[in-house]
Amino acid sequence: MKLTGLIAAPHSPFRADHSLNLECVPQQAAHLAACGVNGAFVTGTTGECHSLTTAERAQLFAAWGEAAREHGVQFIAHIGHNNLPDARALAVAAQEAGADAISAMAPNFFKTKHAADLVDWFARITEPVPSMPFYFYDIPGMTGVMIDTADFVLRAPDTLPGFVGVKYSNPDREQLQRILAMEAAPDILWGCDEELLDGLKLGCRGAVGSSYNFAAAIYHRVMTAYMAGNLQEAQQWQERSLQLIETIAARGYMHSAKAVMPWVGVDCGPARPPLAQASPKELSSLQMELETMGFFEWIH
Image 1 (cartoon, rainbow, N blue to C red):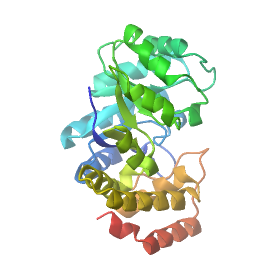
Image 2: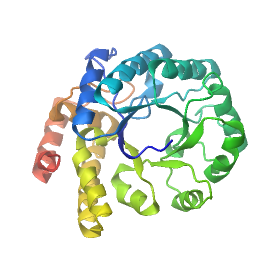
Image 3: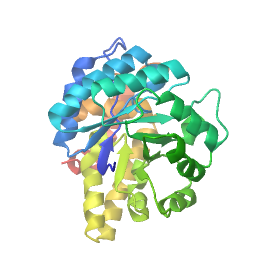
């Protein structure tokens, strides 16, 4: 399996009281399709996975399965969890929902220290769905798990029958180059929006990111210019992406990025505590700064 193009990490939609708002999912899928986004990576970091119950994640899988089919968007279900029964239940729920692939980050409380142990963990959680394509979600900055990912990639095919690739949100570029140079290199999904151009130069052709929810047009221009050999134009658009993300991150990226969504036509509600809640004054300031930099022109 190979995933290409932009794959958004959609926000899990909530109502004002922080209850799950499944009615928003078809709007999210339609928006992504209209923006030329190829896929949705559901209930990952941006989807606030560890702030959701297992039942809520399964409900989101069912909603996304239906919406993704309707709008022609590929659907990757993140099943990562800190306990075996819930992770296995999510794997089954993803399959029943019709997910095209599943993915999981490493457990982040009792942490694995070696690639072999993590391969074994993923083999256990995917045992009920052995034929489903599986991506290791490598994000040490959030999980605190810093294994040798190249070693993981070499070991995985022997034990993990569904293994197809890595969602690489790992800052170690040297390690990534070693993985991509392997004779049977896995599918690598680039995981750093503001450095997408670097990923393209390394050879990645698929990318998962949160800002593809509201700024896909910027990244399409990066990719189009790069593929046309116009590196200067690609770099200019990448710099605009960096400016955008730095502006949002200055106010707390997770809840502020979600707050941008109503301004592009899809209100996903607030972030769920313990994430911060943006005040009206903060939102007004952010919107004004985005207008000043030209964001609302860039995305058309």
